[in-house]
Image (cartoon, rainbow, N blue to C red; front, side):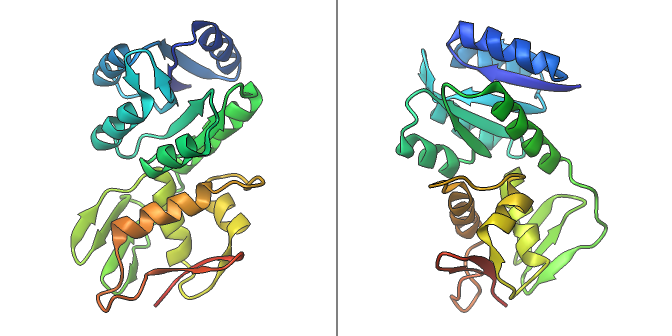
Length: 225
């Protein structure tokens, strides 16, 4: 049974989602502000976090930033009642694995959670991927550039692995989304693009300045050799 930490100040919504997710086999612990959420995370890290953008004692985005520093590989799904594009972009830039606008369908949230949990526990591979000065060990979940280790989120790790396994070969966005996010992209969904942008910033360009990950307009991406 996967333990989830649900962080939202809407207690009625928390009760609804907790009831639904419990029936789906999850063990849910709910917190209604940032302070209690930080304490819960300090006590024991859950399998995944569902985090609202707006909290009574601060921004959920600030809590996400702290989460990424303390628990870089912890899957996080963001919620927002406002559904503003800027909230979505900021959440993904700060390392959220996925994002849903409220009110959300509990079935959709369940599907997103299962997808991020599957990606956080991939089938172990003994093959270390190496392209120039960049290496990635799927078994250890460790990425290094020029022997310097990097911290990636679950989605970024899955994305990098997919691109490195087919270097120089374009992968369309829907294929990459299925491999990295565990779902198809919806209309106007830029989640994949934001994860690619974050990954590019972390791994940087090749030593000669060429980008490692190249975009093909309206098509997808590939890892450049």
